[in-house]
Length: 293
Image (cartoon, rainbow, N blue to C red; front, side, top):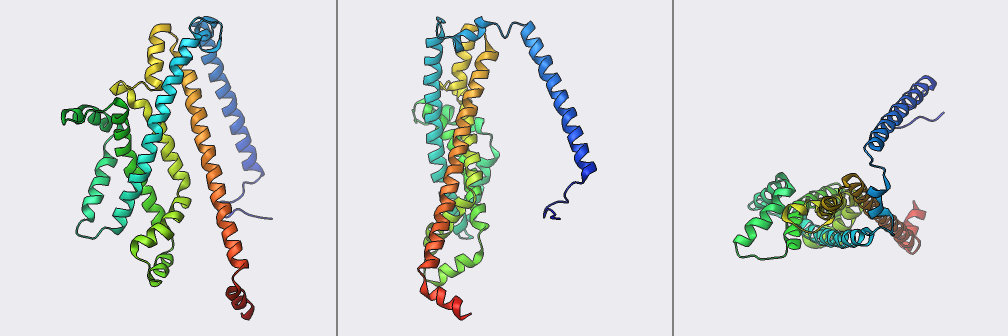
């Protein structure tokens, strides 16, 4: 008989209780969904005229609606890609600064990180769009959105990277320094690559947050997906249908990003295993030492 390391394996009585509870919950959920569907049907939300602009190519509005949504999706992805790239670069730089900073000025780096972590991202976007033009910085709304998203997410990524570096065994840093590597070389060559690999799931989760936060661009009239959906709804009067399609689009894009993260993580893990196996096979000194033991 095998037992779990983290918890005791449930017995027959507990499994029956779990099965019964799951069945009851499933029935209740199905009842709620049926009730909601019935109310929506009574309100005419399943009528073809409300779905036709989104699903029927023969509809007069179909081409215009999807042209608008296509342009808005491109705007969303461009803003997200720029914010992701800048957040990763700046966040990594802040993490390195916090790790390597001396006691005399470390408080400044920590203060900047904690300040932007405590401000809601919507305020940072609004601040960028309203204050920067007053200071003579005149940019398209795209860049105000990117600045706000980067200001918030870069400090989050900085903390993720710092946590990844701190989770590594201290012996690696000490061994590298004993070989004569400078502190910057230890970070860039040894610690940061491992930290990124270890914290990749958390980093990808934060990048997904960046993508979803682009919807806040509506407060500065940036033509992203959610704002465009609002314009379509004003003209067609079908909010449930339009927002359902927008939700499906975001789910599909976020799922693609998640699958990409899983692929990259597997590739990195395979590369690490291959490199370790090659080093073990071609290191006669290590083999000799092992044989002598």
